[in-house]
Length: 530
Image 1 (cartoon, helix red, strand yellow):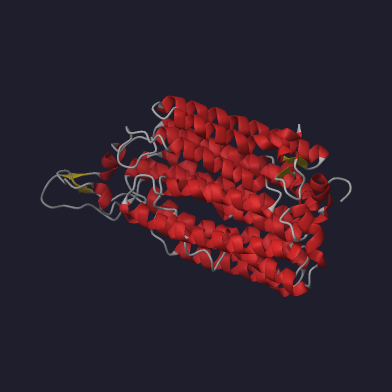
Image 2: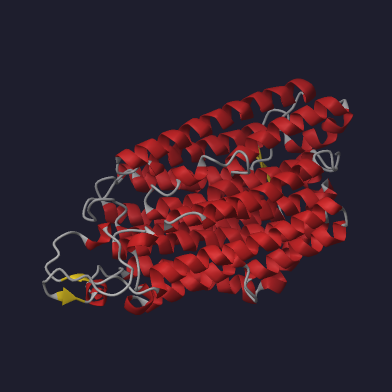
């Protein structure tokens, strides 16, 4: 059964190749993609059950030992991340069917989308399951290479410009990662996680700290931790909605996962605790201040994405079992909620032609289901009881208070402030896009109303007949079920996280204990001789 660990990496790559062969048939590509990702979901669920019952599931590719071979490991943390990420990836794929995944016309399928999307899934899976630094690097590069294609789909000027920023930052972080791997190998003679866990402690403290900071810098860029987060708000909003959603939900979390794995397995202790706490505090506060200042739905969500990375980093910095458990729970929550919010932003754009808050209004009356679909995850993101966001923040707050030192208490206060400002930011979106009535315009107005202000007071009269903008809104493009259905499924999934919070916290508690113990992971890779 340990051979199942290979499936989430290998199957999407095989599916990508098959999709290229079937490039002339959009229906065949869709079928292959759905079957592949559905199989990976079942595999991930099986791996999580086995990892929870029997401990980490490890496999050495080709039978080679950890010294020279590639090892994949599914422990509780990696299996849980794999399951959540694949469920989200599958739902976003279904959403893309309804949208047509094109920018300026929904009748032209892009044959490159499905193989690239499956390669992205394989890269994410490989990053979660990798048991050595170089294979983790390969996982990052696979997902980044595919993301370079996805972020520039359509080839518009804005996407090319934003994609250029994203690519440059990614290449820089990859260069730092390679330098880090070279330094680690030079100092220890291995890049295998289990072997590193037994060798790094023998290095001089200064050398170990340098290696830790090199790896931490790399992963903080990929996770968009302040001050290494400036690239994200300008890169994500321009991509198609499904691409933005999967990027927001997964790519930064792969960076956070890498931080969790290396900080607990390779560098246990509190050598950089204060640095991580300050980074988490600044990421939370500065990120949410950026969100409050925005007037576009996608940019508001992009800044909240940066801000809430700080919550996860806070739990990692505390490094207690409660702190790590809260961080893992919050990662699961945030993957789901942030993805669905970006999908809702795509629905708003599809229906209204814009996500600019100055040009929106009246959606609560014209699209009540869309209003509910936004309201639930928005309140969840803000941490309103009893949603999972509230439960995750409570766990992190308890961990900070239990730590007892002044910096941890400052972090708890920053998390409360961030939650309040998050509520303000999403309430602003709700008020302007959904609740506030749209501005009325003359009936013979020929311009595309989506390019002008849609909300305001009273009517616009130019001596011609005045028509209610409510009628304009009612005539807008209806959201296809293919886009709305997967979004509703993810909203329900976010509610399930609340209902099943007890069992989920049980898994995250056991995952955190396993991370702190380290021995099960090391034994799974090296065997009992370790």
